[in-house]
Image (cartoon, rainbow, N blue to C red; front, top):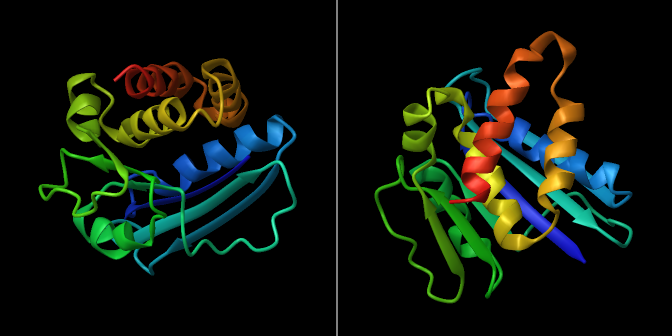
Length: 176
């Protein structure tokens, strides 16, 4: 089992944290993990993406050229990474922020109105966790309990009040 996932969007959308959640879940489960964040010079609004590999075998390189899954939260990221996904891969699109359809017909596409869902739930900064929940559900890379356990351990004590909201967002995506 090897899952190669690229998370991409604008800075401030929690792209890097989303990747960190998947990487941490892999570490907890004893998998080989690579986590390679990348972001532009702007703290908010610049581009951000993160490559995460979770595997049963050694990871030779952290660079992903042909992801098996792509999670995108803005149009420019879909434009940039859509063609790289392997045939029969999975593309997860925040349909609240991306108006165009995926051009690929050889991949499974999941349009999730994550930003709208997060706003409606009163947790506007957690659209990323909705996307992570859907990614995990559709790929089967982790069980619900494994994902919940990773977030529980990853959210720092200083932000303990956010734990319940993060789990609520993950669950909304997982059950979407």
